Length: 109
Image (cartoon, rainbow, N blue to C red):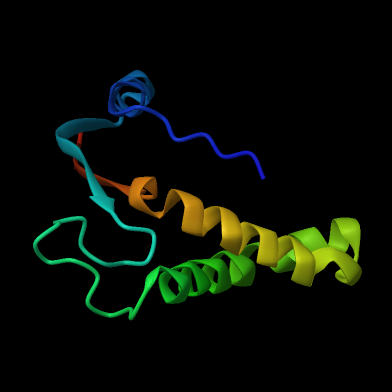
């Protein structure tokens, strides 16, 4: 599923071009894909190991993507697909993060 995560500058540019709002504050907060802290000291205390973390992330992604994938490819491939996804997630766990845009706008009168 193609996803485009725009850089902060592009988001600011689009808001400015539209002209209805002024950007008071715009930043990105980076969270781990499992919702845990990216702070190394805080760690990932909610999961016993990387396998459990990957399983959690996979279930989360499956809940979002399954209807789309099932409609396009059929039900037969889903278990294998998400098993492969889980294995890939385990490989890339240290690098996975979910960026969240936080934008504070003021309506221009």
